[in-house]
Image 1 (spheres, rainbow, N blue to C red):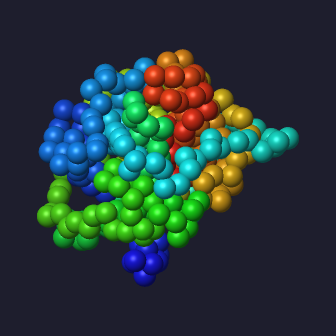
Image 2: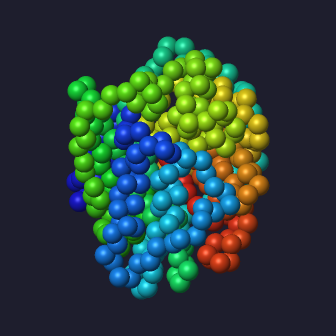
Image 3: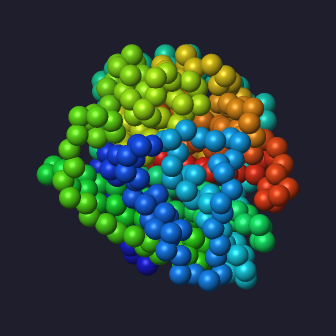
Length: 322
C-alpha cells in the first residue's frame, strides 16, 4: 500500500470528474456516497434525514453536503485519528490585502508559467456527524488525470498527512493508511460548458465562466467560493488563471485579510475570512506571490449541541496541490 501511496503523491495531475451541476449528474464521489446511503448494507450505520444545515453551501458543494449525511454509529464510529484543529493565524503576521495579491499575481503570470492543466490533485478532510457518537473526520486524497483522447482516470486514497502510517477512518470503516478506496477509468468526455470547457484567464470572462459553472445569475462572495471549489476540483490552474481568479477575489465583498497561516500540508499562505452569518465561517488560503489557491477551510461559528459540534470545529478542509 505504501508503494501505491508514493505513486499517487508523485503523480502529475492532468478537468477532473464529470460535470456535477445541481440539476445534472452527481460527480463520482457524490454518486458513490449516494449509492451507499440508498443501499446501505452496514447494520451499524444510520443515515441522517435532517435538512441541510444553516450554513447551506450552494449547489457546487454537493460532495460536502453528501458526506455530511453519513453517520457512523456504534463502536465502529470511534475515530481512527483526531479531527483537525482549525488553522490559526501566525501571531504578529502582516495581513496582505487581496488587491495587493492580485497585483503580484498579475506580475507573476507575465510569462504564463506554470500552464493550466486538466485534472486535479486534492487532499480533503470532511466531517461526518452522528446522534449517538462524536463527530469524526474522513480524510482522503484524490488524483484525476486526463488523456488526449478525452478519457480520464480517478484514484481516491484514504490518507491523512497529519498522521502518516496510522489507520484512517472512512465511511465504510477503518482502513490502513494509503488504502485505495477507488480506481476508475472513464470514457471520453467532451463539452463546451463548464467545467469541461477550458477556463479563461480574462477576469471578466472567468466571472461569466464561474457564474455558469454554478448555474447562477450573479456571483456573490459565497457563490464565488463555491465556484472556486468546483473549478479547482476539475482544473489545476496556471499562473494566468490564478491571477484572474485573484482579481475576482479582490473585488469580492466580505473577504477580510487576517494574516499568515501554515496550511495542513505545511505551506505558508495568506488567509482571508468570510463570516457567513448562518453558522459557518470560511477561510481561504492563497499564495501571496502568485495568487494560487492553496486551500479552503469551513468551520462552525457557533455551537450545535444536538450534533456535538462546537464553534471552531472544522466542517471541511480542502487543499489543492500542483
